[in-house]
Image 1: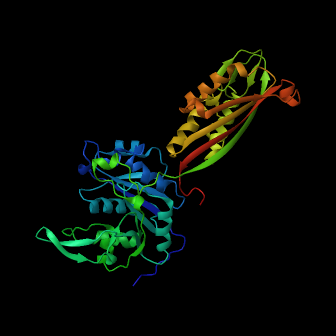
Image 2: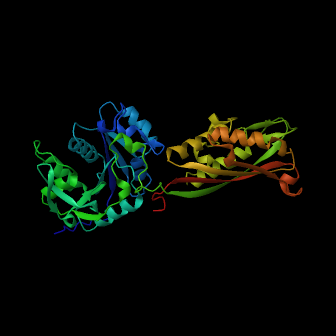
Image 3: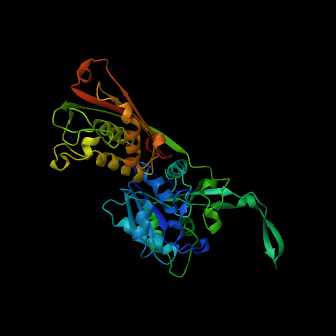
Length: 400
């Protein structure tokens, strides 16, 4: 019998177990920190939870002395924290649960996930969370497709009814207080394969939801190089942002556009170096990720930014993008002025922007236009710039 459990507006915390040594995967580096599809394996699960608006925190149980490796693996996730795990998986989970219990506001629900299953997607998170509306725990499960047999002295034994068997995966989702109580009261001399089994033995009914072949466990060295046909390439979503800026042309100032100093009889006036094009690009990138605008990150009222080189602003936006697990796919900037001529400098501008963002020049477009001598740009009173940035990131729950 299932146990109805539907707390109002539950808070959720993710607990990732990453304290193992991964000896079967070979090598000196624990497998959770080894590259998998271009990123440390731990990064994939941490990003999946961090990018979901459902979770307030991501707690990661790591091995003793692994703090630096773990921090480097997950980057600057604002809601991620670490706790030192134990010698066994169960000890690591308990350490994580106890750390969560000590937080100011413990969650109503906790999702416990193994870092060795990096193929976590948003659909699985939603399925488990929906199941917790009517159950105290839920786990993903897959049917067996091969025939199953017992052993009889290394010979074929009796067949086992595969219809009555399931492959259990993670993440496993539970009412927080319930799973914490089970772990605290578990006998020290009794080991369990996973948290769902512990809950079941304690008398709780655990719901099964449809599993996902993409959650296959990375175990052996060859798993890092072979392509898993059941694991489709990670889906990415695309977001765009726009930026616009204008600055006045005055005598006695240097003219900086797209990070390039241009000889001209006037320069742009502003609190920083007034590089109107880099400002527009920075705003476009920040806008694509809903991270505010350049003024939020570098207030013009702050004297430390007076005369600052605008490449610092753009580099900051690029770091925020990388830390969020996203990447810049395209920048399209247009400079609006009567003079100077932009054409002779266009390639140098593209190369400089690409250098600041650390992306290929092929992803950068710089164009120029005039207003046919209309308006403040037409009267050569100022220069304007507009930009559009396209970024992509792994499919997540940013729309929630």
